[in-house]
Structure formats: structure tokens, C-alpha cells
Amino acid sequence: MKINKRNAEHYTWGDQCDGWRLVNQKDLSVIHERMPPNTSEVRHYHTKSRQFFFVLTGTATLEINGRLENIMPLEGVEVPPHVAHQMMNRSDEDVEFLVISQPTSKEDRIQI
Image (cartoon, rainbow, N blue to C red; front, side):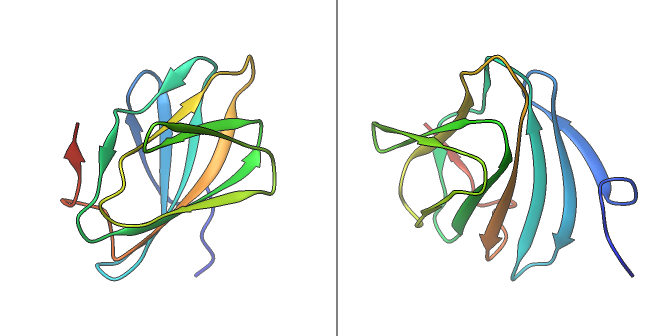
């Protein structure tokens, strides 16, 4: 079956942010997320999960171990396990991106 934002499991997080679970397996997770302007997730790291953030629209800012990285549309950044990070939208427009986690980051999140 084809999957998209209309038929994927939807959830909200943080301050009016959206997520759609495109692949939801123990060994792989693919989530399409939307962050409104001036929102951010909580700084954290994962003990097992390796993540790849790929921006679809807008400009995201990803803090990785204290360093800020602006990610433009059609660019991505990989974050290995045990590396503290925080996704932010410091712009005036929505940011949409994919978060690909292997294995899933569910129940593997340590907040800082």
C-alpha cells in the first residue's frame, strides 16, 4: 500500500508540530515532520538509533553537540547514536523534513 500524509498515522508534538509515521518498524522508522516558525524540539540523544534528517521545504537549524547547522531544502544531516542534538525552526515559514531512524528511536530518547 502507498503511504502519504493523508493515510499515515498522525501525531502532534512540542508546540504545534506535526508528525506522520511513514514507516514504523523496530528496525527502521521514517517520519515526515512539520515545524511551524520559531519552534524547536527538546535537546536529546539516542543510545542506539542513528538518524538522518532530510529537509523537504523551508530552512531548518539542527544543533549537534553545540554546533548549529542550517539545513536547506533537499539537504540532509546524519546524527550518530550518543550525539546530543536539537532540531529547530528559526525561520518565519514552516519547515517540513524527514527523520529516518535505524533502528527506531521510539523508547531510545534521553533528554538533556
